Image 1 (cartoon, one colour):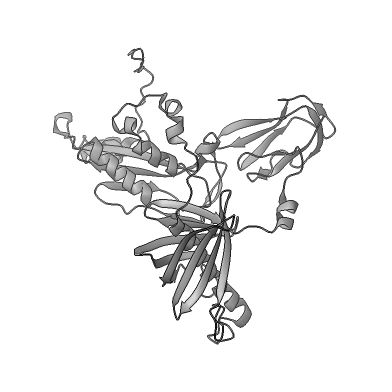
Image 2 (cartoon, helix red, strand yellow):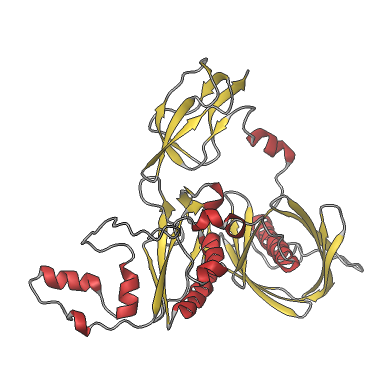
Length: 407
């Protein structure tokens, strides 16, 4: 149905089960896959049409490894951390991956299907918003944040949905990145300091419980302080953690200009590490801390691949990084005019040679990712200095493909 002209167009009829069939199963209390097997075995259908009762409303959200802020381009790589909502009679999670698995360039980038049910559309949407907030994924871009904003859109809630919905609601669905809460900044800094102290003690003293292995800023006749310099996007934070008395800390949060933006006294952090590291270190953990009267309980995940610290707290996600030394940044930066891979991919064709003079928008390389081909074009007129990959090579997102020298 065209929302503007009210014209109806017949598109397709397919007699096989579609990926959305769990929606039907949730509102009819049936198992359509079992029905297919029964029919294939020569048995009659378990129910006739007049015996099927529809109850409530259901939604299916496809959780994809893709980057909505980059044209929904697919993402590939390893799932450093994956936690899903708890299944129930009204919540169904269908997935074939777990933490540690890889999303490759060879298959569809779907991580899972989240199917929810409610007594009516509004109730089902409330369940959908809640369960999307319970998803935790680290290691790849996903569409979870986009789906949450979609499910919160007043027009979507009202059912005013058609094929042009995204284009008509760009500002709402793609807002500017929000500043993290001061509590999230403190949680990231505390987790970073605790984890760093633990790893340092293990590597230096083998984890021995001795005063020489303690790296907790203890000072004789003075209060010790540790400072964590972290960033969220282009925002810089300095978090000073001082020992107040045994097990309690004072925390001061300053912005990149040195102005204090938050202060917390008598903070008692409790850190429960996740298994996965050497000794008692981990890939993250659960952090509890009372911050000015609010009991914060956040899941924290460390990603060594990009030195990130991801905080999941009350359905919200914030990603922080410890700043990389400038000499490392300079060495890792792509050269002037280099053309980089917009996603993890496979090289299908190389259309130019080193030394070639090309015009702006001239095709340089053809990439393949998730069964789709993408043509990488020259950003400006210039000369191809070098080609870093050959046909068949697998390339990570952000890697330089072609050395390019502008005219």
